[in-house]
Length: 83
Image: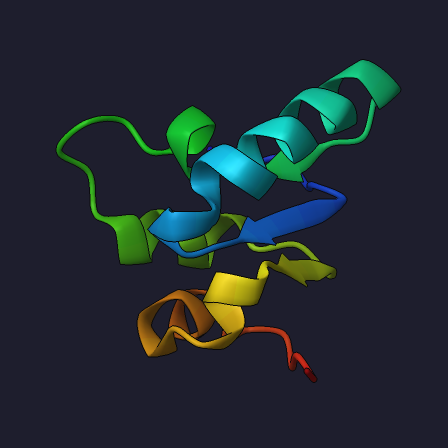
């Protein structure tokens, strides 16, 4: 079954999760904006890379830590991101 389309991909480094990503997750939920967020999309034991590649939408929203994290940016590599 195909993954549903999302408005935004929350591309982040772990260091940004508490201060930036979880508040955005709540704000997006409250505003009715669909998003791809790892904790909501990747079941325990599944491949992070595979799930990201299945679910990345057209807009990537990188956090400051993600811009400095090669791994986090590689996870959002389907869409070009400029800093």
